[in-house]
Image 1: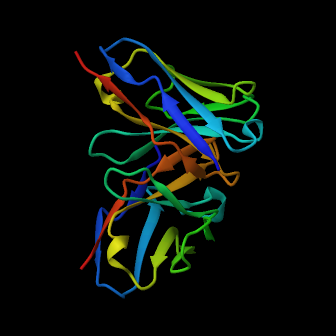
Image 2 (image 1 turned 90 degrees about the horizontal axis):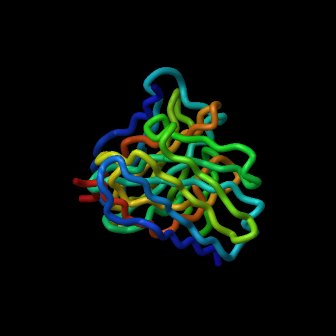
Length: 110
Length: 118
């Protein structure tokens, strides 16, 4: 069974840069997994941030960026702000027509 | 503006069935695949099922395979999730989500709550 891994939690100082990652329990993440990233504040509907590895969704500020770093997908937030404090999820598309979410990363900005 | 409105959630007992609906508007419904994604209370997001734009292919997560079936009626701009043999672990907020065309979830509905409890 495919498991998508994310850091359970991460802490960043205001104004600093943070990179969250999204990996596979076995194997490497590549662009053919079409990594996408979602932001969710408590009690709210998820918001799409990044799709197709590095394409920002409409209205998403350019301080959010996506990439492949080594064998993982990555979400980088440049100049973290207080309202970036929330949960971040990645999703990977698998060849078999299955999508798998990571467990999510709870980001703290302090 | 894309709008997705889920309905059909409720409280059921283990083993019972339920059908969720999602009414879509603001885009060419027949051109887009659609997903169901759920979130159990206090837990992360879980992809449940996907249906292609013309309904020709459907995929489900292993956790619901054989119990949940997704369908769509393009004449009504509506997708459905037929859920059978429900289990307590199916308790969640179920979101209908428009596929963005690059294998990602584009626009999310607010969801409908399913509670499975005796």
